[in-house]
Image (cartoon, rainbow over all chains, first blue to last red):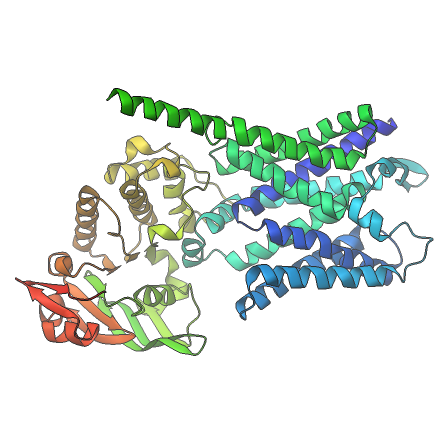
Length: 296
Length: 249
């Protein structure tokens, strides 16, 4: 397979995986917690490396999920003991991330892991880091990791679709009928951590937030069903990657930067043009009502 | 038959006691109004019984067994303002959520469940709104959807948190009709209620609450001026036969 096709596949997988997971975050009003987790997982990745001395997929996922859940737990703990909730996120986010930055300095130059890479990612390098098994080249490791996380998250959403829906819409009813709302919260936090780690290599910690939140916020403006919102968010994520890649190719700019910019562009379009919730439609309906008032 | 027994229930928020010394037993087939001033712990009482908030102490026994073993006998209608009505879903879907406790994990609602949800909507006069986005419903219609969801839960004991708040007169009537039907079927209903003037017409039992139960029993013997003064701290007077609050609530 060609070099650019691998980049497209990687980008689309990032868009779909982050898009569908992010839709749940947007509905649960947890976008900022996702922002925190996308940064603190750096500590998980560095920790996993210091223990196993490799940037292998599985330990990285475990490390990231551990720190992701730790982030959510610590925010919850500070929040419930009287710290303002936005300050709680700010404190946990920066302390754990800073610890990751400090620890990363202990890792030598021989390993491809540094702060800039972690923050910005470089999708253009993805096709060169391939997985070879018994002398056979199986393609980029990032694609395998992303594919695995995509299937994992999709399976979790499909299996616990009802439980996600009720615990998001009416957590009190959910608890009263015995749905483990707290456990579902931490499952989602793990899914966010997994998505972040898998997307780390290609788009980095900052732009992964765009991929997690913006497609969900966009599809919220466009659809009226829970399942529809998750599916559409995945689609918008994928579309953003394709648009961003094409743009970057023609203008020769950062691919991941262009992908994230594309999410913002699609959001802006939906914000103004969405048939139901867009500014233009709202303005038009208002005008129509004013007309009716005048004629009455 | 005892539907619910509450023994020694207490709830604190930080160090402030919100509820203390709560002991009462609700007989099966009764319609109880939970009455008390703002901050008396009415919603807290319901939430602590349903295990939605942590208790400092207290046992909740439902038909002779601990609450956790009897979940499928319980139906709950939260305050309408406690959920996000901009959530992307329609009326039918909200009603179907009432079936989730019966459907169990992983499985999806089947045709029979969906049919049942339609019937519940029909019963509250909302069938033609089944596919309506919930944000497009009026306050009264939203409350009816919650009522249909409670019907879908097919419970023996219902807890309702201010179902009459901000609804139109027709919806208020529809709610009362349903509550009376439930009582005739031998179901037990507990309702957090604000409007003192309708208490005598609506409820056969009353729980007067101000951090601790002031009195519980049949409305005619419990809903007295003396008891109301003890519950509301004197800010009460009678207009004709109906008590009214003279200052705040």
